[in-house]
Image 1: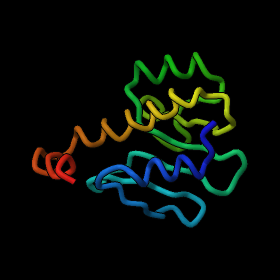
Image 2: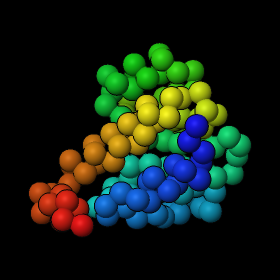
Image 3: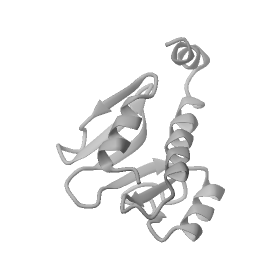
Image 4: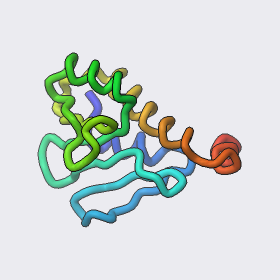
Length: 119
């Protein structure tokens, strides 16, 4: 099971990832190239995580896991909220985090993307 601390560590470990608190001290935002790829809610147990997601896969994940819901305070089509209660398979959660990061990186200008690959 991935804990909130493990999720924070994973998100911070991506090339070019920047941790920020634009919504206050209870929500950690992770950005790459100035664009958001993950929000981690810190003030509740178990934690929650918002991740960007391909709309078709988002629907599939919501059907598979009760703890995956449309993005809280986000575009419900492109974002999922995951309750970090251990019910989501660890490999699937890691894949969701990778997917969110990759979606954002793929929208960055080519020069910025290649700079991330060279780190």
